[in-house]
Length: 136
Image (tube, one colour):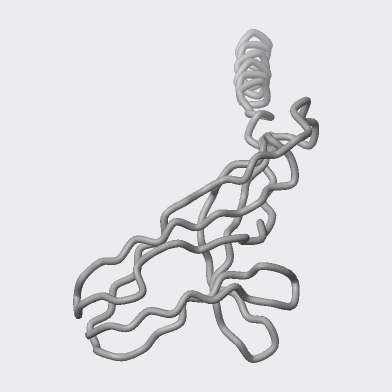
């Protein structure tokens, strides 16, 4: 009887140690990638287009340091005006290359209707840079 209790206790102890040691502490590794709005300095592209034709616009933006890269384009609002903003990503807080070059990305625009449209990108905290396009 004592032998059975001892074996049972050892099995329970062994299984408990196995479950505790297999827990993964690496799941909580914090990502060092940070994102921030990058202000647009220039939009280049066609001023006219056709219905359902995809137009490409070169968007130039400035990052905080040379390690910044394009992440995505998202919608934003300044007051009551709606527009777009460029989001840049930074792999780490420390960057040895301190002088950033202007970066570029391509924005695609397509309309299913005729009319005049304004493509607005955030150029500062209070202003948009606007590109007008007429769809015929």
